[in-house]
Image (cartoon, rainbow, N blue to C red; front, top):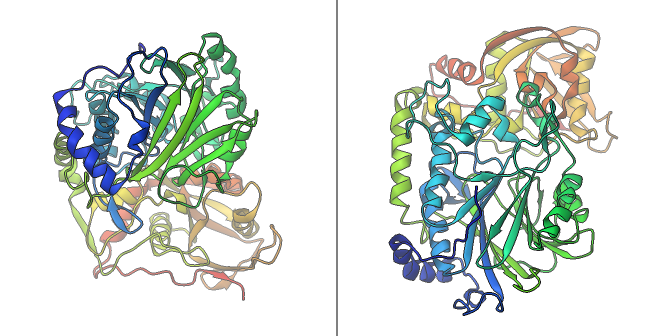
Length: 567
């Protein structure tokens, strides 16, 4: 995609937003307007202000239904209103929208059943309003394999048999960049490692990178054609090339993250960021200025030091369309160096301006998606007597985890069942439960299977929940219960296991149900790869639907002490 400036004249739609949005943003989510002076007469001599709006881990969240701090937040129409207001408020400052991975994948039916084309069309619509969109790959971009990944980005209907909201499907207008995803066959990159953009008289480089842990959290078949190289080495390897082009304002789109205690307002000097992102930033070249992170679905807004001891602004804005990072940077037009960075994590609350006026164009796109999937997604399967949620007990057990594990155990007629709690993507609300509700719980179209495991292997896989490298998610179980003691060392924390109420026999054989992702060692549970006698069953959503349809009374599922903490 050719570089271009986004500092030209505003569209009539943008002009209409300006007055209202400035007022709303000042009242609801204050922006330091003093950081955006009137355009200087000579950008070659005056500091250049740039705005970056970063949306990480969108996951196809077109519809409503998400919350942030207990308040309804998100959906594509609501997020669009916030982003367009922020763009209008930026005035003549160059504005970019950055997507640090997982734009698609694990999506609700409105996007997922249409192969996430509606989500890419949503972000395409934002380009029409001025900002250029730059993206990198997350681990979920690979959910449907290589061919579908390339079709989603480059366009065309391929061999698909879905309803296309735009026919033929045009592809993504965002430019995808990645410095560390390499084809095994020839060692070339999946996409350009970086892009350089004109930001109103100064150049800015954007570099992309995907978490090196992707192979351990994806089905092997989906990423078997790629090598995921070290993030630090990959990013740093392109810095000299960028510098030779006279560019010193460098922004990284990194699909890897951490956590931090959330707060309101601009970036604070002191931060408590944990997770892999902190180590990655510490190893980055001294010329890197900003890291827009993702993957952990958490809050980050902090300054961390790079390898040169220079402060790097690091952001992450939760997930599922509920917020975005509003980044302000200033570039010296003579040296090309970034002289100022600051950010706010802006919640996209539905009940506050501008969220109370969802964008009409994107609302129309959402309605089209809902109509396309409605005949399947709206079918009522069962009724819930109360909410069935992912909320965990102190021991790590949840009602929803129990339900899904039970469904997979029943589907395979197995002795026990396992699921990784990371595969649970939506709660089930009290009342009628539709097919679409159950799809939203497990939107992966994974295959449920059974395998034979020894009792010793069952205990070993439970122990892996505390062994290094720590899995990103714990296990929910069915058909068994166990007790663990947090005071004991890793490898010996599980003190009691029962299957069907009977003590586990380490030498006996048991049939265990799970999805193919776990069976191939997903989330680091490598013990499952030792199972034998694998039998494939239904898709995960079909197993859950069949299980729910068998209930003659309203479903009432609770955490029931399958997992217990000793003492």
